[in-house]
Length: 553
Image (cartoon, rainbow, N blue to C red; front, side, top):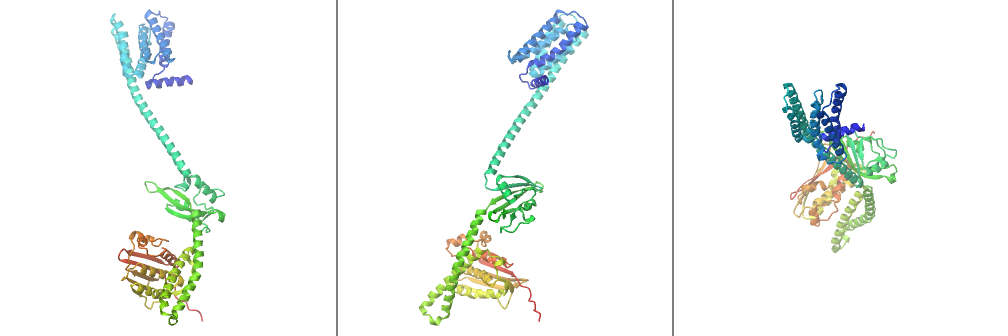
């Protein structure tokens, strides 16, 4: 096997025109020469002339040179002389009529063509001419002999030429293959480097990353997400996207259904942003995660997988809960004395006759600011309690009456601010299932905003009516208006327009956010439209209560 490998390596080196070991090619030339010597001496029992013996001697000399070159005892550039000497030697041996070694001339010719290309073809032709034709021209020969000599010459030259061209083509392919191999190695190296770089990033980011394939199977995940998996699935994950584990909704206690799992929604092509979940078996050790999902698709539009990012927001949620508890405590403690202040001031103002005239403006100022402070405390308390249907005291009430009561108080403030105030209510009752105190808070907020943001001389108009199965309240003003890029933010907690802040208009940015929460808790909706410099319109819709059922006698 080792000799076969050396032989193949030698041929490859010849084709690549490298500094090939000449011993392999020389041994190939010796094989037909040895066979011819056996046939001539043993089979034909012919007498060996001097030319034949000189040819054998030259073959031996060429072999010795090849061996020394192979052992690096002679320079590699001498290699071209070895096949040239072989051609002369075989030509001398061929002079014996019974010898058939002339056919072997193609071997050194091929050698010259393979390793030395066109130069080797020229050397082949030159050596053949120098070796053969002088002997044929020195004495007469028959046409058959001349034809055979010509055939031998042409065959050797053609073989040398063919293999030279083949070697050139081979060398071109070798070069191309080497270039392709280098490019492939460079690409593999770049890919490995990029992979190491990506792995370093995935390990360093403080976000759990999960990649799912088109079938919902886990493709890869980083170490951060692995720890999350251990928390959600202490018994191990089976690799499916619908395994629930200890995963809960935003409240931290409601167990998520299979179709609510981020992974299940991801493999169905949904895109999520900051989808809040809680994870963990022990309630005291649960962690909160804001999950974002980005699906990706094939060029044909078919779902091909998704990447999920799990941001640990436990500390943020804990801070928000502590903030809400603080607001609730402070607001509750402030609300009780404020209620007493407002109540006693109202009692004093009702007995106007018994109050000195100079004291009345002071009491009105106290009343106005106490009520304003009372509304701010109510806003803070409502936000802290995360108002929902469970916190509402629902009953069958007249929504029109709620608006009418709020409008009476708002009209006083509007007139004092130099505004025109008009609300159309009529005789409509518009009964709804609602909490009158909370709905009054909503209407008060809307009226107060309209008064606060409308300059002197402006107009505030309201309308209460029925539209289908809804009770609808629209309140419009001719105030400063809201820029289009801020309209979507007005229902966000603590949002205040930059223009409002510059003009130092007081407020907390909670009124409309709480109003939206209250209306949606009643199953209704609140919408806003506004044009800068023209005014703002707020529309509140609540579903009407069903018809009253007569009690049996």
